[in-house]
Image 1 (cartoon, helix red, strand yellow):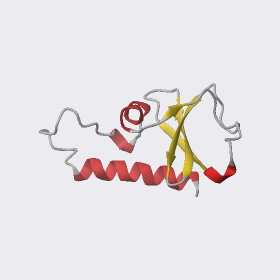
Image 2 (tube, helix red, strand yellow):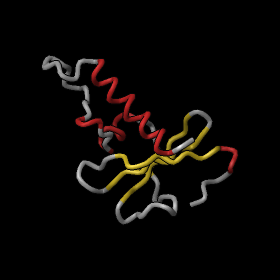
Image 3 (cartoon, rainbow, N blue to C red):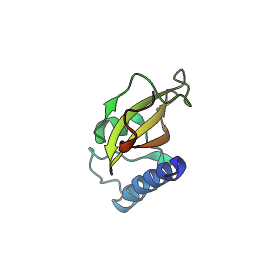
Image 4 (tube, rainbow, N blue to C red):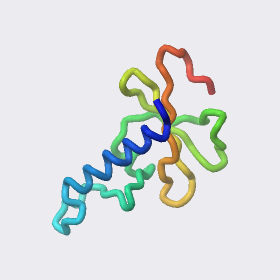
Length: 105
């Protein structure tokens, strides 16, 4: 699975849900998080996705500028990579097959 396409799908699904649920309606519930410009922030991820915090990230990511979180879904491990900058947007999602054994980092 391509990391970019998984991220794009996630962003599209969230943006579509926000539009379909009336994101522009001023009467929306105060407990609903809307995503400006389709950005999936760490704040939204933290509150809505069951995950584990990681001390490190895969070697291809610079841990001085990003941090990583771990999820399990669809028989895969997924590493979500967030920027430390601004609202801490999602930068990438890297999948690993569970049959690969321990994560290589």
